[in-house]
Image 1 (spheres, rainbow, N blue to C red):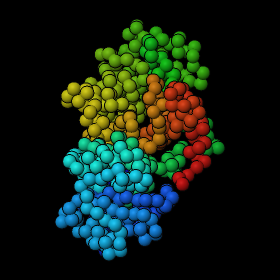
Image 2: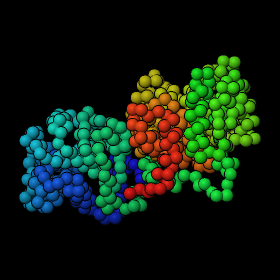
Image 3: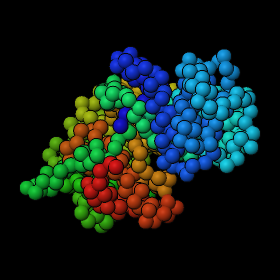
Amino acid sequence: MKVVTAQEMRDIDKKTIEGLGIAGYVLMERAGGAVAFKIRELFEKRKVIVLAGGGNNGGDGIVAARELYNLGWNARVLLLAREERLSHDCGEQYAIAGKIGVPVEFRERVTAGDLHGAIVVDALLGTGLHKDVEGSMADTIRFLNGSHAPVVSVDIPSGISSDTGHVMGVAVRAGYTVTFGLPKRGHVLYPGADYTGRLFIENIGFPASLLDSDDLRVELPERLFISSLVPERKRYSHKGSYGHVLIVAGSRGKTGAAFMAAKSCLRAGAGLVTIGVPESLFDVFQSRVTEEMTLSLPDRGDGSLSSLAAEVIFGFLSERADVLCIGPGIGVSGETERLLEELLRNSKRPVVIDADGLNSIRDPSAMKDSKVPLILTPHPGEMARLLKGGTEQKIIKKVEGDRISVALDFSVGTGTCLVLKGVPTVIAGPEGRAFVNPTGNPGMATGGAGDVLTGMIASFLGQGLRPLHAAVLGVYMHGLAGDLAAGDKGEHSLIASDIIDALPEAFKELQGKEDD
């Protein structure tokens, strides 16, 4: 399912109205009717108060009140706008409501008596908000949030930016949101996602060709699509059919990262996994591996890699491996920086880079010069170090301020596939397409979870998936396994190895169910 900006949704509105001849007031009727229907579905018959602004969002709310009133509900509208400032369609709906007898009052303030025992419909501001909410409108929203009344927001909680999920000064905390056509970015980006509550997406007459247009480049991956990405396990096959991944990882004190990446790579279906390790730690690794193989790499004598490892890595990739995965636990030094530059510029196999591998990239041009697909998996701090151009905290704020745009700009600009980890994780491809991942939970904020993800993405890449699809499937499955593990262990007790252990169940659940 596509995820849109406010402008993209306005364009869909315009094309529906002008291209198909469906009048704007017809869409408003359907929108308000959808809200009323959802309220009847969610609640027993009771008092309903619609808090309406003067724009089209307010018009949707008035229609909802009218529909409920006609069905015998105690529904009334409080219009927090001046009559002369109502939009054309909102004004039309106000006039119709008055003729039918729906109680409508113009107000500047809302009282406790208004909200007592009521379901509140938030139809104040909608998706067109572009500045902070102030004055009496801000006071109303604060009062509503403090009332503990159940709130159903129309299209998006008032005060949330449709494009970034930012709180624009103050915002309504909804228990439910009914949106139209497609989810907006502000529904899935935080903190907007927290304010949205349970999201319902209603098609009010937009043609499918507009809702699934290739011009819309951001998607929320659904289960059926994800299921289609899972590599087929053919009966007539062998371990070589499912890829050989070389994972260059680990250093003194950080051996666990290598083992978790390798184990998750195997659990995600890779046929063969070799761990490339510093030669002075080879015996440590050799004594602990079971299904994995090991490759001794030149080091500096202190358990960290030497830049001379590049020659050995290239030889192994040329003769045996299909994918290179590098970074978990390798440390950062002048040697790793030289190693990464050499690998980026000269590898003949796709490369997945995480953790210290990302922190060792000092020359961004090396990514552009790469002759093979690159998948980068930074968290915000690592992303800030890749972007440069200011203090780390300032860049992190920029990253978190608009995760989708930052990811897309970087991916397109560098020609890489980017997995911007966080809440939510955003996956972007160099052709300008992005996915916002819906799975995962706070229990996954634990050491080693990123190493597990890296191994999974490398595994799917080795099994033949395109880089963007390998990344999308890896992130979705990682989150799904984390959700299953949290259901068993709880979020507080979740550790990275629990995610690996839950992968078999995640595969079974994904392949056994489709979207409702």
